[in-house]
Each structure stands twice: as C-alpha cells, then as structure tokens.
Length: 282
Image (cartoon, rainbow, N blue to C red; front, side):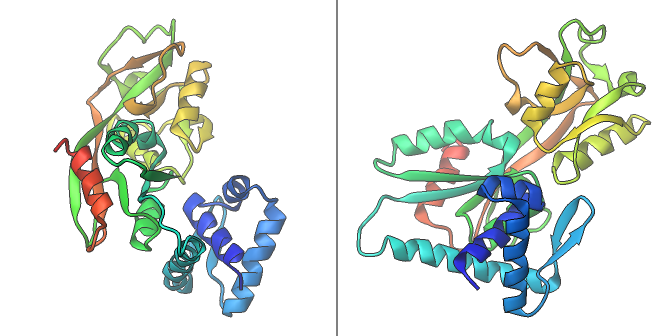
C-alpha cells in the first residue's frame, strides 16, 4: 500500500463519490478505482461499499480510515521536520459555511497570528465532516450541530435558509412566502450527498408536499446559479448569496434554520482554541 492510495481513499470518503474525488485529485476515475482496489487487496478486505449514487465505508473501512488519516498527517509532518514552520490551523467545514461565517473569522485570526497559515477542507455531508475531524484530519470542524460528539462543542448561532427566485418571478415580492405556494413547481434540489437535502425535504414535507426536481446539484452555490437561470426555486443558506446576481431572496414561512457549531477533539491545539474564541466573538 502507498500514501497515495491512502490519500485517494480519504478523498473518496470526504467527497462521497468516486467522480467528485477523481475531479478533486485531478486523476481519471478508472485510475482512482484501480488504486482503491489495490489498497483493498493490500489490506485484505473491502474498505468501501459502492452503492448507487453514493459510497460508504464498510465496518473495516471505518476502522482503517483514522489510521490512513494519521499516516498521511505524519508523512506531511515528516517532510517538514527539522525546519521550524508557521503555525498551521486546519479547519473542516461545509461548502455553504465556507462562504459565510468562516472567512471573516479566518481574517481576524490571521491578523492576530503573524506568519500563521490556514488550511480549509470543505464537505457537503455533515457526516463526512465529523468523521474527518474525529480521525484527526482537521483541528476543528465548523458545521451543523453534531448529534453526538465526544469533545468540546460550541454553538455559533443559526444559519438561515431563504427561497431564491429569479428577478421578475410573480412570487418574488411576497416575503415571507409559504413553501406550499411553490408546491406545483419543479425545484432545484440537492443530491443525497449534501447535508441540506434532508433539511429541504423535511421543510417541504411539513408544508404538505414532496418537491419535484428539475435538477439536482451537489453545491449550494450552484443551486443559487441554477435558480437564477429560472430552472426552479431553491432553498439556500444566506451565506452563499451573491451581490449582483439576478435573484430575489425571499423569507420562507415558517422560517427554516439549522444550528451551527464548532467542535474539537478532547485535546484541542492552542491555535484551534484561539480560533473558536474568534468565532464566538471573545
């Protein structure tokens, strides 16, 4: 087995699909699949369960993943051994949050940490985000409030979702707007790998309908663009709204929110603790 194979495995788990992982790694999907199979042969058991539309870790894969993350981290540290380097803070977060609360906090933290560096890893799935932090792949996670976490958890407030409609839509002037008013329309929805998918489905179910998809996407920023093109309404976090885009953000009725949190290991680094203090405004 090789470090490259471990990196490929970690990336597939983080992205939730071979296609997205291959794109991120800059390799072909057959090459990626071949390397993962070679790693599984070296370990002696399957590490991934390949299902339609998603990839999951097998029980042995869940056992193996933290070791792969730790090995990759040790290899990176070894490459820099002997030469003092800057403090590096590794943040794992969600795509939408990486466009919202994280950037201003990073800017404030860096201003107080001369010479420091920040690495940001983005995820669509809250489960993948939590798993990455738990395995030691990041110093802290910033995302939806985890259902269960063994280390420190700090609530950061709520992230609000808004209905996005193109300029000129007859319902764009109504705010707040009950979701049931959009029940007959095709929607811009998220695929199953995005943590917003169940939130949108639950909100629509509470309004008495199941949304019909015109198109599905993995990223909330892409959902915003698709809604702007008139393909259908979308529910997006306020953090991904772009000035100048020909869309109207309408408040849904009732409001749709999710609690955001920062969470760390039981023994957080001083850099991570200082960053959490910035997030909390201390």
